[in-house]
Image (cartoon, rainbow, N blue to C red; front, side, top):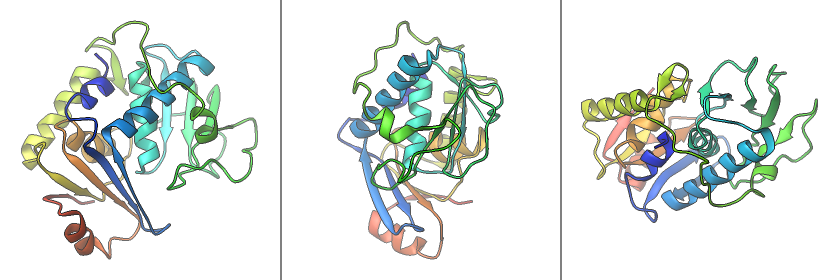
Length: 232
C-alpha cells in the first residue's frame, strides 16, 4: 500500500486534515481528509496520464510548506513516485513561481494561491501551470498495481521506513490522533517534510501549519485549540 493510502487510512474523510495559515497573504484555509484526498488523486492521475510516471520514478518537489505542497507530495506517493529534492534528471519537478530552470524532463509551477487558483499569467520556458491543469484530472485514483512497502518513497527511504520514522517521531513528541498540532517547520526534503508534515499525519492528527510571520502564534493556538507545538 502506498504511503498516501496509509496516511489517508489513519482518520475519517470528514475530519480536518490540514489548516494552513499564510501570513504573507493573510489567509486561513482548512482542508478535510476528503478534500486533500481529492487533490492528491488529481495530482496522481495527472502525473500518470500526462507524464507516464511509474513506481520508482523520481519526482522533485522544491516548494515551501503549503497545503498545495501537501497535495503534490501525497499525489506523487500515491502513484508510487520517489520524491526527491534534486530536480536535475527527475521526471517532473514541482517549483514555486519565479524559480529558475530545473533540468527535469518537465517542470510544473505551483501557484501557491491560498484559494487554489492557477497562475495569473502563463509560465515560461515550457513549464506547466500545475493547479490549472491538474484540477482537470480525475477525482479518484486507482493504481495499476499495489505499491509495496519496500518501494522507494522519499529519496532513498522506502514507504515502510518513512512511515515508521514519522510514527516514531510522533510517539516521541506525544502526538496522537486526538491532537491538533501547530507547526512552523519548513518542509525541506526529506527531513523537514517528515518532521513537519508526515509526523502528525502518520497518526491521524490535525496539522495547523503556519507559514510566514510567527508573531501571531499565541492567537493561532487559542483560535485553533492546538495541543502540541512543532516549532522551527
